[in-house]
Length: 281
Image 1 (cartoon, rainbow, N blue to C red):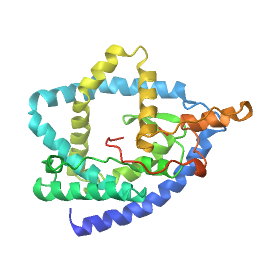
Image 2 (cartoon, rainbow, N blue to C red):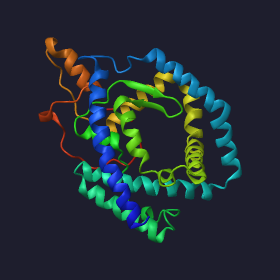
Image 3 (cartoon, rainbow, N blue to C red):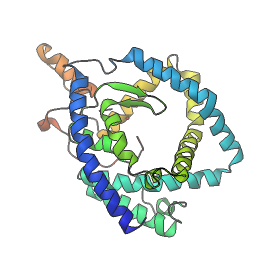
């Protein structure tokens, strides 16, 4: 990645981050609707979108991903994943810095440098062999770190489970993905398709397990997503919420569920960065 590309990316991210943060806060406040609101107030609509996504997956994504797995050797698929992960590490470094987690941010910078220089632009993951772990952080987690609640749960067409906060952060996250550097070109379309197919191929085993064990797949995916995102925002150290008096129970319940931002005084101290990719506070 050239210096000019990095400078251009940084300037675009700075402008987009401010705009999305402000818009996201307003949207999330509106989505809460009041203390104690359920995390899934749009369940009826969400289930329709979820069923649509399931149909698209069965008809297109899963067959293509299965064929991709059968045809493309595993080392090649791993190299594709490493390439996209290298960009994710660069974006993670920025988000760790924004969250004040400088040690994790510098480790991510070191990972990107090692994999870019010695790993053929990220195709080989030499950084992991050097003992440098991933610290995946996205802009949704950064917003959560600064007290922006998850807001209502929402299922996005094709993209799947999200929340109002995380959906508002998606445009910023996309600016740091490889396709963003090839606006309006066949390369952009090809990279986007490759990223989707390779990601889906990596989830084939997980979706089979969910299909086998989940009585209600929608509820299973929703609850798993919300719990995972909340854990990621707190770096795995989710604070316990004490039992509140009866007259303030609805407010405390909203905070505990991640639908409302906790007061500033109750914000947790910075913990060790959690290794993982993208779910709710």
